[in-house]
Image 1 (cartoon, rainbow, N blue to C red):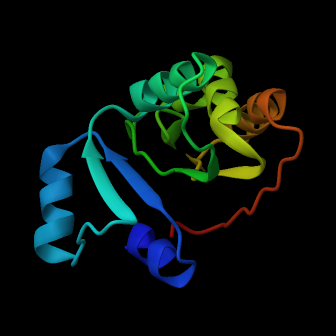
Image 2: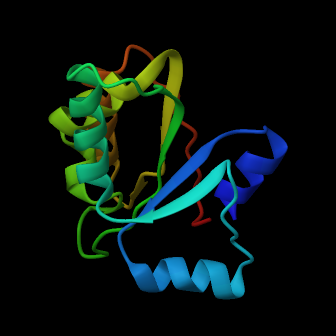
Length: 142
């Protein structure tokens, strides 16, 4: 999967936060996910992980900031944006992500929307937390 690719191809230190332990188990059992010194998986709430990490940085705890944060969480297909769940597009959360990124860091987020208006609103919200926004839109599901 993507975390293994990033870890191997870029010699990157990768932390995956997965809410569902069943998904983590499937990744390990069927998709070859193996933890290494530079690739680890945590079962937990990604929103809480970002919030707690930022709090620890603000509290002066010695931790590295992230070069890249990837948000690829799925939500309800009944929402106008099915990915990510709306909590991942709230300004406070996005500012939390911005606060744990290195000066040259970036956040990549997979936004799946069948509504142009909802997508435009998501883009505007992202702009409130990040000075640059680069969007790649596809017409088909990928």
